[in-house]
Image (cartoon, rainbow, N blue to C red):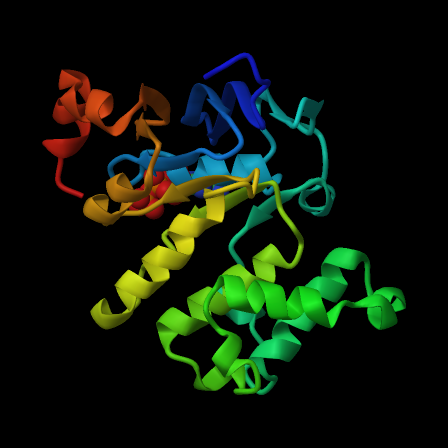
Amino acid sequence: MTGTAPLLSMRQLSWSVGGMSIVDDVSLDVAAGEFVGVIGPNGAGKTSLFNLLTGLYKPVAGRIMLAGRDITGLAPHRRARLGLGRSFQASAIFASMTVHANVQLALQAAAGGLRSLRRTSDDRILHVLSDVGLSMLATRPAGLLSHGDKRKLEIAMLLAAAPAVLLLDEPLAGVATADIDSLTEVIADLAAGDSGRAVLMVEHDLDVLLGLSTRVAVMHQGALLAYGSTAEVMADPAVQRAYLGAAT
Ligand SMILES: Nc1ncnc2c1ncn2[C@@H]1O[C@H](COP(=O)(O)OP(=O)(O)OP(=O)(O)O)[C@@H](O)[C@H]1O
C-alpha cells in the first residue's frame, strides 16, 4: 500500500463466545479500490469477522477504523450511515414491488426515512440499476426475477446508500450456473475505476474469488493466516496446509 491511509482498518480484533475464541487477534488494512477475497475452511470465522465489522457482534478486544474514524463502539445503523454496507438478505426484497420501487425504498432508508421521500432522485435509482445491469427489468415485480437477478437487485439496493466499503458474504451461493458470469461481472465492477470503494467478499468458489481479488485474506481457526496478493498467498505453505489441503 502507498502512503494513503487505509479505508478500513482492523487492529487486533477478537471475539469469543462461551469461552471459545472465534475471531483471534485479526489486524487487516484495506485501501480504497481494493477487492479483498476472504477465504478459509468452514468455521474459520469469516462470517463472524463480518459480523464484527457491521456491529452485530461486539469485539472482546481490538479496534475497527473506517476512513480514519474509530467505529468500534457504534451501532450497526450508524456504521451503515458512515459508509459500511453489507449485502441485503433476500428477505429484504419486497417481491410484489417492482425492481425500481425496491431500490427507491433502499434509497429512502439510506436517506433517513419518509421525510426524504420527495427528494429521492429518480436519476440515482436509474444509475444504480444501470450499474447492476437491471435497467431493462426496472418495472418487473422483484419476485419474478431469477435468483441471479435478485442478487443484482440486492447489490443495487446496497449501492443506493453509496457505501465506501462493501461486505459481500457468499453472493454467488445458490445462483444458477448460467447466471454466475453476469453476476460476477457486476461484482467485479464494485471496486473498479474511480468508485473509491473497497470490497471484502467471502466466497467458496475459489476460481471466481481469486479472479476478482486484488488481495486475499486467509482465515484459519479465527486467526488471519495470510494476507497478500493471490500469488503470494497461494504459494504460502501454511495456507496450503491449512486451507487448500482441508476439505471445505
Ligand atoms: N453467535 C454465535 N454463537 C456461537 N457460536 C458461533 C456464533 N457465531 C459463530 N459461531 C461459531 O464460530 C465459528 C466460526 O463461524 P463462522 O460462521 O464465522 O465461520 P465461517 O468461516 O464463516 O464458516 P463458513 O465458511 O462455514 O460459513 C463456528 O464454529 C460457529 O459455530
